[in-house]
Length: 89
Image (cartoon, rainbow, N blue to C red; front, side, top):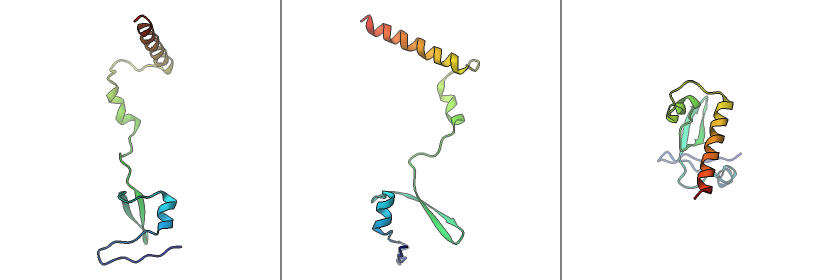
C-alpha cells in the first residue's frame, strides 16, 4: 500500500509504481467520483459511451427493416459491382 499527502494546493502525488502499473502518463485527464469514504479515480475517455440506438439514424435508410441475410446480400452485390467496375478500367 502506498501513501501520499495532500498539498496546500489540493494536489496529491500518485506513486510512480501505481502510474506505471496503469500506464498513466503526464497530461492525462481523470474523472474523480466520491464513493463512500473515499474517491474513485479513472482516466477520462475521449468520447462518451455510445449506444447502438444513438447511431442508427446516421445510416440514411428510411425503408422497412432488413434482415441480416438481406443486408449481407446487399453488401455482397455492392462489392461485386465495385470489383467489376475496377476490373473493367
